[in-house]
Amino acid sequence: MSIESVDTVVCDVDGVIVLGTSPIPRAGEALEAMRAAGLEVLFITNNSTKTRQDVADRLAETAGYTTGLDTIINSGWATGNLIAEKHRAVYVLGSPGLRTTLKETGVNQTEQWQEADAVVVGLDFDVTYRKLAETALAVQNGASLYATNTDSSLPTPEGLYPGAGSLVALIETATGVEATPCGKPYEPMRRLLADFVPGDAIMVGDRADTDLALGTAEGWVTALVLSGVTKSVDDVPAEYRPDLVLASIAELPAHLGI
Image (cartoon, rainbow, N blue to C red; front, side):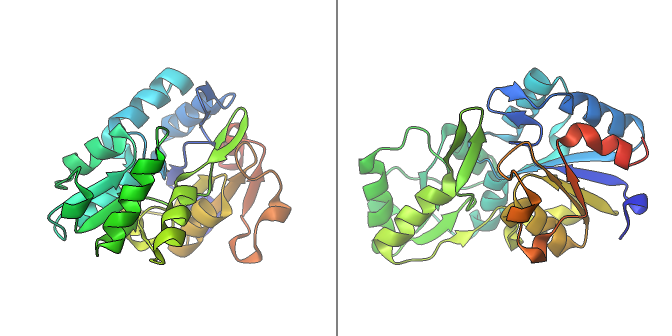
């Protein structure tokens, strides 16, 4: 696939469009330019703390870009679609946004770890030791373990915060059980893409192990932006080397001939 054939732009959010509560400079303008040129602009994020509506609101409030829910996929939604029909009671270590997303996808949740036949771990800004202990106990009791994503870090203006993957690793270490990952670049997320990305696409992201890995697996053009987690293309494994390296998404329209 060549960049000339691209008709869909698939963007990560954290580190690509926004950084914490601040926009990446001129990110909104770039998104508007690409949409005005007739390109489909979609957002695929591993951040499970937000509902899809939260993501849309964040894009509007932070980057000044208005879009609909039909352009947004997040890892919580991918998780819910995978497990809703498989489990009767799910114990959740995660944010209120994740709980809402799982409810929207039909997942029945429980606050009692003893009742759980599955556990979902996502990023939780209010995590406590007791919550971690109950999550581990549920897994030890036989509950299946799912990770919304395995991102080890979350980019912020202050630097990298621990991501959901850090909490997942803690539970895996405590229980000896490996989680089933649901976000980028894994199969549960990829299953949702067929209806969202019908044509040739470019994946724009700041992480090799999620964004570039997803784009590579899908056979898309890939673009690494240096505005988030990854600060040098030299840090990218050879198998995920991007087709483009950009300081930020603001440079992308020019490469697309816009």
